[in-house]
Amino acid sequence: MNNKPQSVSLMIMGKEYRIVCDDEEQDDLIQSAMQLDVQMRKMRDSGKVNGADRIAVMTALNLAHELQIVKNQNAALKLSLSECLANMNHKIENVLENP
Image 1 (cartoon, helix red, strand yellow):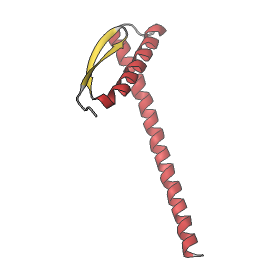
Image 2 (tube, helix red, strand yellow):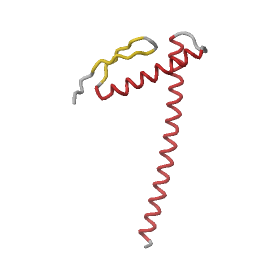
Image 3 (cartoon, helix red, strand yellow):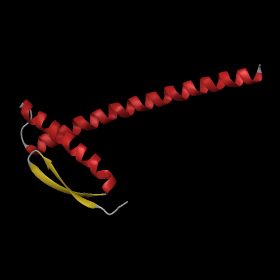
Image 4 (cartoon, one colour):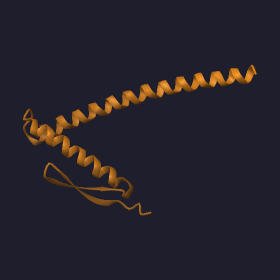
C-alpha cells in the first residue's frame, strides 16, 4: 500500500483546485468536492446570493449546519443505544441471578 501523498485535481464551480492527500483519502475528497460543487451551484442558481465568496460562505454555513444536525442525532442515538444496552445487561443479570 502506498501512503505517499498524491496531488488530486478537483473542479469546484469551474475552478481547478489541486489538493495533496493520502491515497486512501482521495475518494472521500473527490466525493466531498463534488458535493460542495453541487451545493455551491444550487446556491448560485437560486439567485439569492451573489459573488463566489458569499456563495462559498453560505454553502459552508449550510453544510456546517447539516453536520451539526447529524452530530446531534448521532449523540442522541448513542445515548439511546447506551440506555438500551444497560437495560439488556440488567435483564441478563437478573436472569442469571434468578434461574
